[in-house]
Amino acid sequence: MDGILHTDEIFVRQFFSDHMKRKSHLWPFARFWTESINYCPHEVRSKSSVFFSGSVRQIDRREILDFLLNRLKSSSIKSNFRVFDTLIPRSIMGGHDYLKHLNANSLVLSLGQKTNTHWIITGRTLEALIAPHGGTLIQQEGQYCKPLGDFLTPFRDYLPFSNPGELSDLISLAEQEPKLVADIARSGQKQIGKIFRKQKLLEAVLA
Image 1 (cartoon, helix red, strand yellow):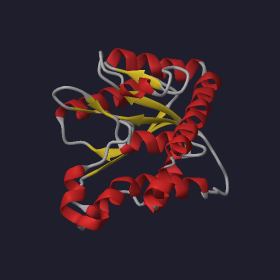
Image 2 (cartoon, rainbow, N blue to C red; image 1 turned 180 degrees about the vertical axis):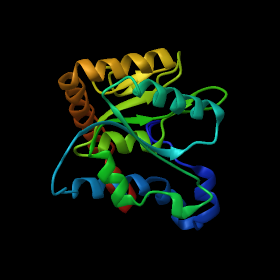
Image 3 (spheres, rainbow, N blue to C red; image 1 turned 90 degrees about the vertical axis):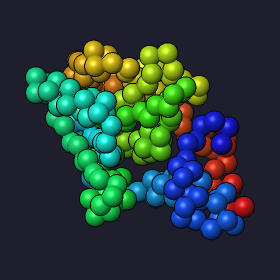
Image 4 (cartoon, helix red, strand yellow; image 1 turned 30 degrees about the horizontal axis):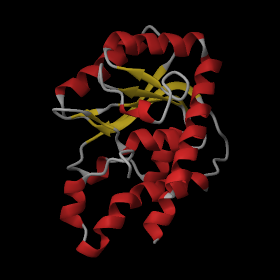
């Protein structure tokens, strides 16, 4: 939708009927948006930790997580990683638990997906921004390709990195300036809310 949303076209083509394909591209985001708006945790606690949930098959993604785990050993910030295998459905965190973790950690790591020519904004990136009490988004981007920069401002709405050194600096920033980092989370949530209203996502799905 105007270059903002990326959907898994292969998955949609394989598992959805023809008359549902257009809507199915948008539905996962609309569902998460609705669930987030209605999410009322009994107690909101922002743990000083980095939350990551995802399937890690590519070597470069594993290297980033290994680096971060080692970096956090010398930090007051803890790790909260939920890695799963997409071929084993029971290993994937359920929707309610996933939303709970997004709202309970001070930082949310989202690893980018790169193609030969560009980087992709994944659904998990948007979900981290949409979560009503979510932590600050730490987003992997390419050194010369920052797709989130088209509609969010780096270091105002999210924290970008393109190499391990920059990621290490972001952990230091989170330790030294927790209030500033929390303000970045709120700014990102506010900005993504404006974009989703502007794009009329729910209306497009329900039309």
